Image (cartoon, rainbow, N blue to C red; front, side, top):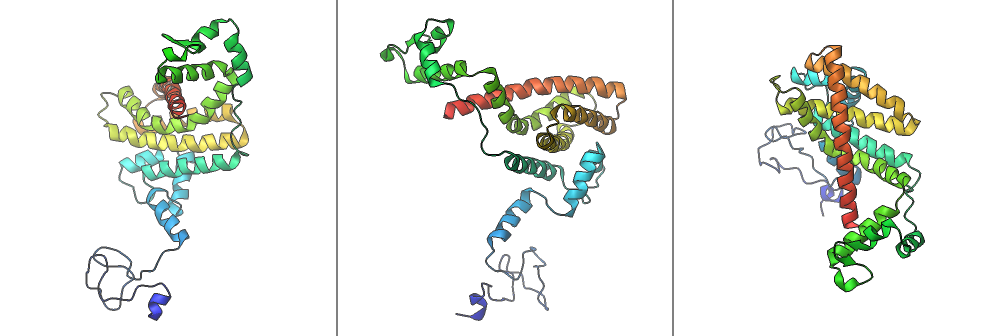
Length: 292
């Protein structure tokens, strides 16, 4: 066994192992034809993890410069991207992935164990099922299905009845806790929907969906960071107003609006956004119930 192989390095060849392009002399660090490294070795776990994240999440110098502009200069990143200044800052999609990555990692570190959601009391449900109340009809019957007579129920009907039973047994606080837990995941789905809302809001402006999509990426990146800060400091209400004001300034700079135009559009967008966000949360909750 050669010394090179013992150390884990592939033997040096006069050509690139990827594209077979003849390498120059002295031997370069990267192939001049395809850009692959010429000194190959089995990667460590750290190198593999860094390489994987590097394709999707940015942790280098431009990220911190980008985050500074994202937080302190509303609308600047979007305008810089539109005007072709794309090497100085991290590209919009990587900013979004980086911010959401930081949020979910930070949220996991902030939580002291699993989220405590009080489950329905089985004894209470059983008592409610035996007591004559208006909820008994809904929880024990679904269409022609009567749980007292299982032979009249199909498998789907029995499953749906169980879902209704659990939903009826949950209190308002339990529903609220479930919604808070699902809201960040719903925000991931809302990013392209928010871009569609912008397209409708600014119909006739000549801007394409892709341009609104960039603004939506930057907006959601900021919202994820603000939500993480609000969770860590307990400032949800104050952060909501701060994010709304930040969005107004960003819209003014990106779309060339006055304060009045930015304000009424911001209020309208916020209303539809939260209505749709609630719908996405409900859909996610239903999907979780489907697989439970």
